[in-house]
Picture (cartoon, rainbow, N blue to C red):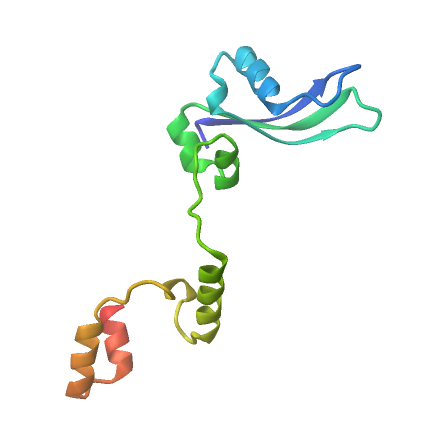
Length: 137
């Protein structure tokens, strides 16, 4: 990770409640002379008694590099990633279909099958199912 700087941070805030992450990002951006958009801070815990908070920060060289390497849940917190919404019923049906599948990758369940016509025609010719699977998958 050449384009990333990782560091642990202690934030001192005597007499105040926990400092918002947006403020921490802005202060760190000034310190490192960059924009707050490429700063990702997480894992902050306030020490007993208050006044001090410890956490981690990631500073990326570019927003594109951050989008490529940062986990989706952190990108979503910054508004850079939108998760696809599916209904609970669709998720349940897919889960139950996956439970029925045997000896094939579970990720392929629910996707449109390719080469079904080729496989059907090959089965009519008497080719074994294993040969078809090896040939087209």
